[in-house]
Amino acid sequence: MRSSRAHSAFALLELLVVVAFVVLLASLHLKARGCGSAKARLVECLSNARQLQHAALLYADDHEDVLPPNAPAGAPPSAVWVPSTYVNWQTSAANTNARALTSTLFSQYAGRNFRIYKCPEDTQRALNGDRLRSFSMNSQMGHNETILPGPFPLTYTPPNYNPGWRVFKRTTDFFTADPAKLFVFIEEHPDSINDGYFQVNMGAQDFPSVPGSNHDGAGTLSFADGHVEPRAWETRPPVKKISIANISASSNDWQWLTARTTLPSGQ
Image (cartoon, rainbow, N blue to C red):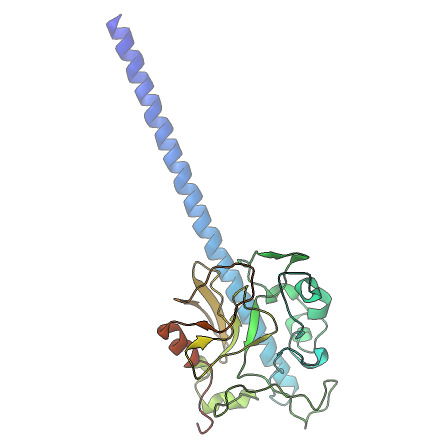
């Protein structure tokens, strides 16, 4: 009888060990699958940034090397790379209007594919649905030169909030600098993104527009030479569905970004 009970206890112990082992394997599998999915979404986001960069270069090829005009608030909708109306957390048409994105001068060079404007990790919804854009353009990039014919308003030129610092107007301007160290498109923080103009402050150590950190603290950027890369940020405020701007930036983040934004006017 004692032997039978001992055998039963041993069998139960074996069963518990097997169950524990199966649970462990399942948890490891789910963890690995989650890591794989996150990596796949980062790869997709990098691909989107690369496609935006490629579209900008194609646009310039057709416009005497002039880059697509940037998109600060108030810019004529037909004049800029994306509509300059604000994305927000409420019911702005810019949140969900795919047709507006695919009707710009720039979009034909992006295959009129509105999905490349979005980071797949940016899943926060506005009141009127999924927002369509996660990327903005370096404030020191993009121009409209009046010498060019075309449907855009000849009087419109994007502003420069950094006097004494260069605005890169043409792709040929890149080669007076190091194009591998000039970012063009950047993933912007969901609480910061509004227009398509990523303002960089070359003076005080803050972020008027805040970099996105949707990939476990990292965000993606494209560069003038065509390459893309992720950047792990120290400045990574949580998403609160409120508008943020001019937040204090870590010294490392600010120095890294401004070193890849522009050059002094004399250089």
